[in-house]
Amino acid sequence: MTEIKNAKIRILLAEDDENLSFVLEQYLIQKGFEVTVKSNGQDAFDTFCKKTFDLVILDVMMPKMDGFSVAKKIREVNEDVPIIFLTAKSQKEDTLEGFNVGGDDYITKPFSMDELIARIHAVLKRTNVFKAIESDQRVFEIGEYTFRYDEKLLIHNPSKEKINLTTKETELLRLFAIHKNDLLDRSFALKSVWGEDSYYNSRSMDVYIAKLRKYLSKDSNISIVNVHGKGFKLYVKE
Image 1 (tube, one colour):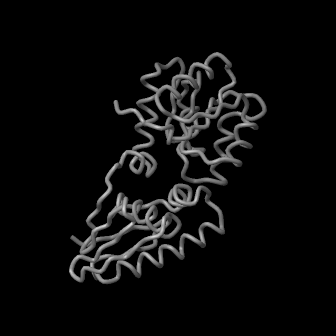
Image 2 (cartoon, helix red, strand yellow):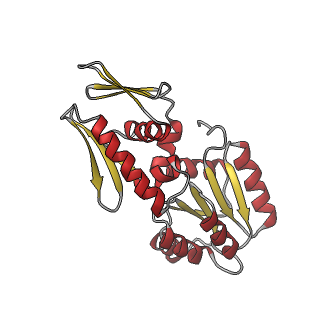
Image 3 (cartoon, rainbow, N blue to C red):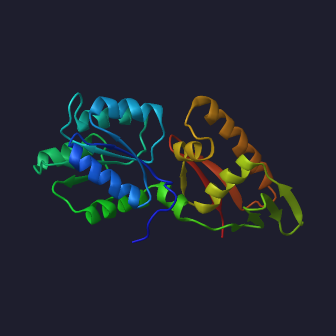
C-alpha cells in the first residue's frame, strides 16, 4: 500500500479513549498523515470550524457531543469532507444512522490498524483529495495546449503562443488538468489553492477561472463548465 508523504492529508481525529487515540495518532503520523486529536465532540467541531481538514474520524460515543451530532453539524458547514465513524456498536440501525447523517464509512471496534488505513485510502480515493495528492505529473497535454507546471507556462502548439501564468493560475490549472473531464470539487479547489473556502476566495477563484477560459479559448474543443452546486469540469473533446 502506497504511503502518503509529507503529511499532506490533514486528519481530525475525535476519540475520548485516551489510550486508543494516542495509538491511532502515532500510527497515522507514522503513515505520513498530519493529525489533530480531540477528546470530545464539541472540541472536535469547534476545531473543524477553525482549521482545514481533508478527513474526519469520529468516535460515536463521546462526551459533550456524540459523533453523529458532530457529523450533522459538520455537514451544515461542509458537505464534502469525508467522515469515518469509529464505534463499538454493530447494530444495523446505528450503521444506517451513520450513513444518514453524512458518514462515508463505519468501522466497528475492535479493528486492525491495517483495516483503518485501507478504509482511509478507500474513502480518499473516492474524493478529489487523494487523486490530487498522488499525482506527480508536471507536463500536461490539454487539447492543442501543452501546460508545463514547473515553468508556469501554457503553450498553444499550433500558434506557438506562450502564456506565462501566475502562481495561482498555475496551481488551479494543474487541478483542472489532473481532473480533466472529471468533476473538480469547488471547495477542494479553494482549499488547495487559496487555503480556505470563503466567499472572498470563491469570488477570486471565479476571476481566475475566467482568465483560464480566455487562455484556452484558441481551442474550440476545450471548455471549463460550471457544475451547479458542485464545482467545475475541464472538458476536452478527444
